[in-house]
Length: 215
Image 1 (spheres, rainbow, N blue to C red):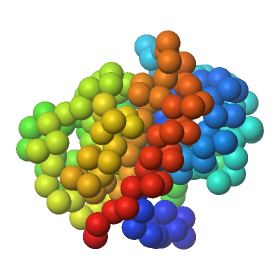
Image 2: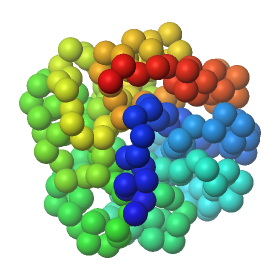
Image 3: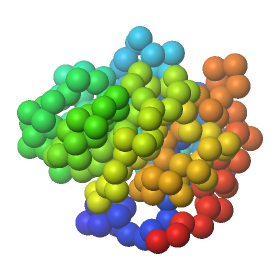
Image 4: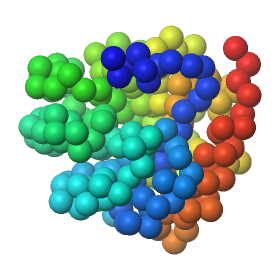
């Protein structure tokens, strides 16, 4: 079962999000993060890709890297179709999708779901932890801003979760040792002039791989 496979082991995983170009695929293929993310059919984002573009990029992706489709208030049929046809391995819901949306999507696919939550208060954390999604992602709010949220709000979380928002090589080790996330999610910190940078991606992945977690 893929979920058990994903949960195996104690090392921190890393996701590079917001890929848009063939050069981005080449960069992650070299660096080998655990996940890479594509923002699908959300034109308000400068990192948006169409479904056709996603499929073209996906064909060149190394099979060891799990592709994640990031959706913002999309019709539930869109992530379901892309999951079921294998274009993406996980769907990340980054809008105002509620638990009813998650339950509906789970009736349409048996693939894995990530729900992103904007963290401003302890109540936001509690809501996230109770989500029926397979994984939760804690973020500052609007994705890709390069800003962190108040990490002191995060308790010991017993379920697998992604930490996002303002993460880069300068604070990855601190974040992982302090919060023990199951995975970290980077986007703007591995860019130069709005485009993914292969050296920054490689350095970020190597940084995470070299961190020794104290259990």
